[in-house]
Image (cartoon, rainbow, N blue to C red; front, side, top):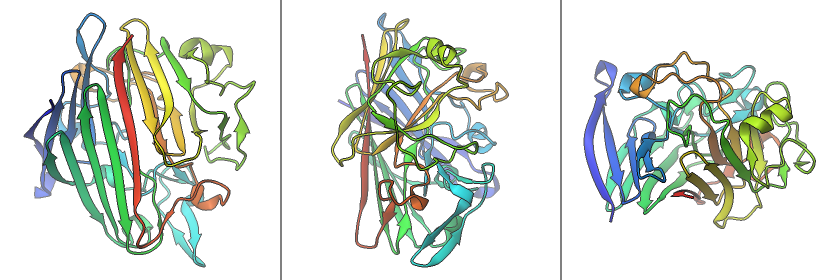
Length: 342
């Protein structure tokens, strides 16, 4: 059984609308999602002692989400991740996007899908959000109709993304939740044990754009096919952290992607997806300046993201999985976040 309750979360400035919060609850999970950016604002899971903690970084009030912040819990699009120099060419026409991350365009631009109000519809076991991204929004071609559905099934949070385009456009949607399995507000994720089921990854240049090489993980710091304890691993390889796309076995079927285990609490997160890649990000740019829920400060490495998605800059790299959505087709991807205790 899943219960869904609806409440007001806050009002946008200048009468721009009311943001609602939807609380999804099963016997194992409680998830709060708001209609601003389809953002997950809380996710409560019990530890092996039966004590519930909120595992996602974020804010208690709407104001927190309206300030400059690193996409906590939000759906990002029209194209998640980076597009080199914010430009691409389609059918002989060059498109220029906003440059908002060094020399590149990141997560849909200045006002991406994370910074808009979505239209909610309550379902028996979750909530569906929809919106129409107008032709030319943030420089992207064509109108895009988008639906994002969150449902609960026991210990599993399921996110489905669908989209339809009026003209050919790149589309890449993901959720940017930052997790800490010890509970949000815990100082770091060094005691988390991480496994990622990927034989290859994408090396990046100094602006974090893939070089184009699809490199084997074998014998590198990126070989996470067997569990590694994060803190020790970063130390051993003298790494600042991960912010890389791991290449998953290409198929539209549901498949295992990653597993994170926190020995202290016993909590386990397993991720399954239909997407061809996952961006593993260890919160390298968090700097402790944002004040989160319950007065928590979020320093570097205090949360991790597993952003299931297409490969970064795919629109400019023809040998990457196809990222273009054509009229008459449907973009349809699902990611499963499965929580348990070991």
